[in-house]
Length: 208
Image (cartoon, rainbow, N blue to C red; front, side, top):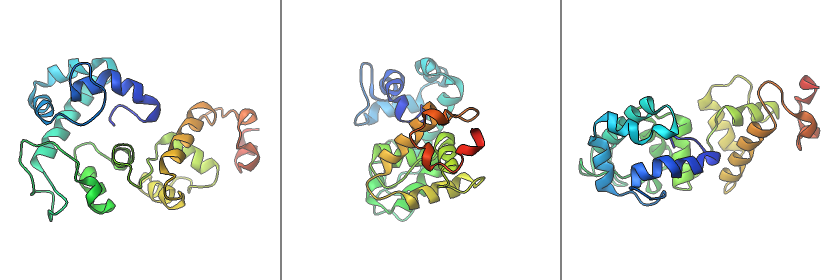
């Protein structure tokens, strides 16, 4: 999820799936032994492996920090906190769907460099849980449509978006808003004349 979101899945498979799952692999069940190797590898080796994806120097250090943190804070559905319930060599988040959503979210946002959006991506895309990631595109479209409070912090935006999303529609709404923001509702010059939502958009007059 450090790569990007739905439109970036092809890039994820090209660059990061081989890094996490092995040469020639696509995203799937994590090979724990290989994940441990990546965690303990020299950072320069990790950086080189993910270089085609861009910003490899930053991402390589962050990926290893996250893998180490997961090892140091193993948790299981029956554990009382993030410091017990697993071995230090195991790298698994498969317990996430079996605990309350807030607990899973808090664990993820406690990992190095993981904020609400990245945590939401993991919970929704990897585990199909009820969460809606809000990035700059989603927030921009939501604010212009009057769905989200203008200027609200991202934590509030996530809560608002989740509250207005019908259960079971989280992925579809997120992807549609994201693509609309990228393709039509641009930050500086939105293509209002081509917008399918123009007639119901309270912000259209601002860009006419």
